[in-house]
Length: 200
Image (tube, rainbow, N blue to C red; front, side, top):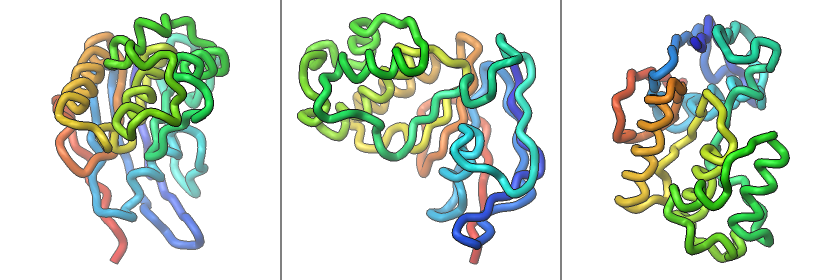
């Protein structure tokens, strides 16, 4: 599998965020997207996830298991905000995402893998910021998809949580997955870099 971006351009609020941006990512590879605040890191991930449309350029996905499925259905997008329903328990949140996204992963095993086995019955609104981030990562395991688009994946996590994310990413890459992560710091895994320049 290979994911490529060619001459991508993004405009937000009438302002050009970036233009002429390209990347190439193969199975088992990670790409760390860096740049100052406002440079377009999150916008790039959202474009690939199908949440924004580029004003120019092309995104290509080759060698996917299902060539008919759109890119958005091959990818997980994990944004700044954890997409959780606070009134649902941790397990119910995962069950919601599994039903919505069509996954068949084991909820208990996914929570345990992220250090949340003890919190399965707790409403997500009771979880700390770090625990909510772990729950978002558990979604990536409960619903398997080959492409992970991660926006600051280690935000709000302690040292153990950061090590957990690095371990999950390493396992995903070893299984032939692809990762593109926007980050202001090291990811804890081997990754090529893509720097986006911020406008003046």
